[in-house]
Image 1 (cartoon, one colour):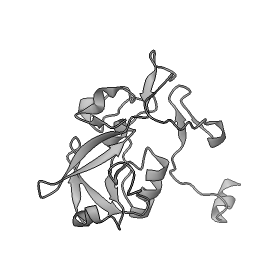
Image 2 (cartoon, helix red, strand yellow):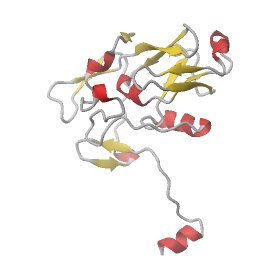
Image 3 (tube, rainbow, N blue to C red):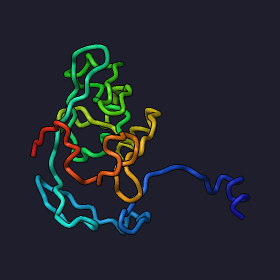
Image 4 (cartoon, helix red, strand yellow):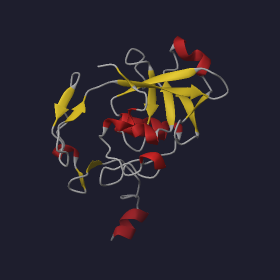
Length: 187
């Protein structure tokens, strides 16, 4: 039955992002997920953590532009996913970053080049106007990754630990703040 449905184009196989529970070790449907918009620093209880975990902190860090001394500052509330970044996005109409069109930045831990992509998804008024793109760990970034044919680098295990994509962090819990590595908070 599945083969016939596949042959008719009624079903297909594709890698997609899911809402993953590290506690349940299972995907959770969108209707089972309670999305909470936090305004500024917020402490929340998270299954598997003894102490409440801090959310809502906008942290900045810099990528070095390849072939020069310029840096690009990005802001994120999910610092731990920077290990899986595969690009930095800027809005194509943002005059502040015209000089970066067609350039790349260097990932500080994986030592690979990440392209700077132009995408109207970027809100020029939010944060620095430069967005780190982690297609394997964020639904918006997934869409940007698909549009720009970016690789998907998974950096967190099913158990919520940092995987071996960056050996110096392997086994650390994803929500631990030890990954701050010189990041500045902008709460």
